[in-house]
Length: 114
Length: 110
Image 1: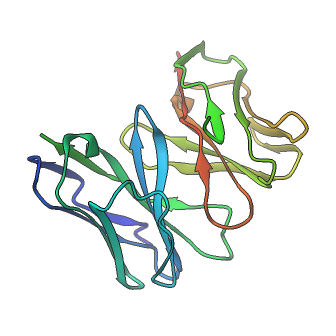
Image 2: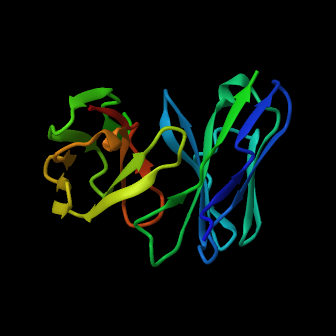
Image 3: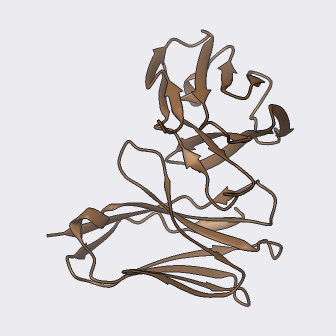
């Protein structure tokens, strides 16, 4: 298995631009998580899905952030418009009911907003 | 106050030392406790997990949970340079919303 796949690995954009981060979970996993990691705030859960349905989005910082999961093998996290304070590493993770104590993380997308 | 507190370090030790990493948590409903290891520019990977109080050992690693004091510990025996990484403690109640500590950066010097 290729593991959780994220793209792009690095993104540099200017303030005000739209940013779309992509994730492909491990096949057979029905839970998908989006996290943001910064030095100041650590690893924060933004939103998670179960069977493509958003379950908890209480960590989404504001309306500029949105996430979708149109099917079991693809999810996006969109920031529009982006701001310099959105600069962070964004991780996608997936798991299943049988492996609920372990989340499998992707390599992350390092986002820099200038 | 964050639900899971962890000293960010960094912690620097010589090779072969015993390492003690610690977290405290505030949510009494937490039942599951995990330690993740994160190498530089990689995603976190599960190292160990425990349910409720007690100890769990896996090779050179021992995880310990004391629910009475809301204290989580990870001990690394005979530490190696390859153990140099950031260690994140994490907890959740039984659903899937996992709360992570800030992570402690560990450096093991050869």
